[in-house]
Image 1: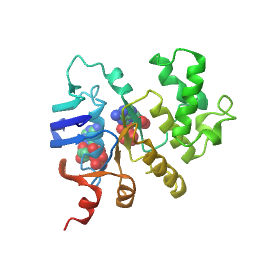
Image 2: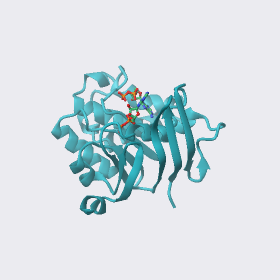
Image 3: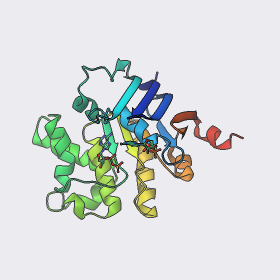
Image 4: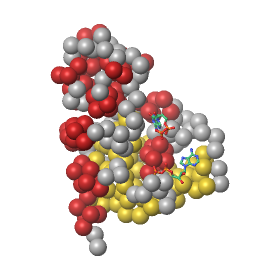
Length: 238
Ligand code: ADP
Ligand code: ADP
């Protein structure tokens, strides 16, 4: 069964329609890539999933999104609680101007996820290990700011931060779009290790990246999801 189902999603920015009848499912432990030309609605579709558009007055949205069968667009669903269940990774690494430790411990702290300091220590280490950053930062957790890391390290820190609230789903908006090729390879490699514990929706401009990381690909054009299927099938279609 799908973890997330999107049905008949339509979205307007004022008069301008940005999404038109978008339908797709996300399955457990899969990486789904959104591809398509710039301006086709990929980022808008991603932001709908964790209701990041709720506060934007010009946005009007219709359709249903269910997470484990629960309607998460229902008015009684609390967006901050919902966002805990989705980790967000932006294109440009954006660590908090705070220590490496605080970047990862902040989310679990505000959501009260860890009972003891020892639990928090183990959890911060686990998140940094999953983000393939632990060995590089373990001696500087409390002395170095996240913003003083290299670009690629900052992005892996942002992935550790996204993992810190124990989300089921990670939403990644071109996570390799502003880092160098070596850093990109590291991020792609770690994305593949996020399965089986997480499902991932990732936007990419790179067809090669989609080939390397995605189980399935969704191709957007002019606000419509034109085609979705297994990666090999999408790339070999006539
Ligand atoms: P993509 O991620 O595929 O580049 P977007 O989802 O960012 O596409 O944009 C889809 C369309 O919606 C584009 O025409 C874009 O100009 C428009 N758009 C995106 N964000 C806004 C906004 N905040 N206000 C008005 N129009 C927007
Ligand atoms: P951009 O499209 O240039 O990244 P946005 O206005 O979309 O700018 O986002 C501003 C900041 O808000 C980004 O740094 C991003 O990390 C955060 N953000 C955007 N969308 C979401 C989302 N759906 N969930 C969590 N954070 C988000």
